[in-house]
Length: 273
Image 1 (cartoon, one colour):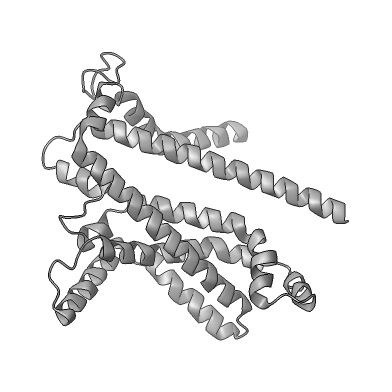
Image 2 (cartoon, one colour; image 1 turned 180 degrees about the horizontal axis):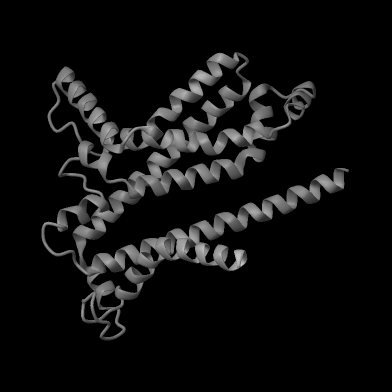
């Protein structure tokens, strides 16, 4: 009985999580463009999607912003985690970790409004017009991505054997070379996980982007939101289905790469032993 209930509970959770996505993907192939009846399988909405220049431009903007912000956040967070790893003061270290967690606990609307007020104040100081745009969105996305990437990279540093870096330095490596040669290869899975998390969150963000964007630079979530005034095009279902498929492929590739690296690491450890 317990096994039956646990299996049913897990099935219910997965159904709630993935049923909407599955419905979206199925009806993106619906020829009639209706959510109440599936009239026939067709790629008509995918063809319409690739003919919609505004949607493709918004998608391109979202991808560029997500890649740039996730890369910037990953680089900053990796070196921040390195600094925290080598920091000796426990009180200061704990305080910094607590402060970096604040953006994750803040509601997105608070972060978005605060970012908007900051950029408006800076624009007033330097007397700049049309200050909002790609630059402000890049800063905002990098800022809210930082804690999540840091949360992915920090545990990898905690698992490192400090004697490896010390041994490399005893053999003549500089601290920088010891980091890139010894420590960095060991934390690569955490860096990749943080990078993918930052990319996904940036691609998905609407609230913060809404406050720091401009009409000259529109991301895909903003484009979809602007359509809700009228009826959402069925080509958007096709676009969402493509995004889900791409992210699924990337996640499978990352997990496969991580499992391969873990197996090779275990083989190396057995060989050394």
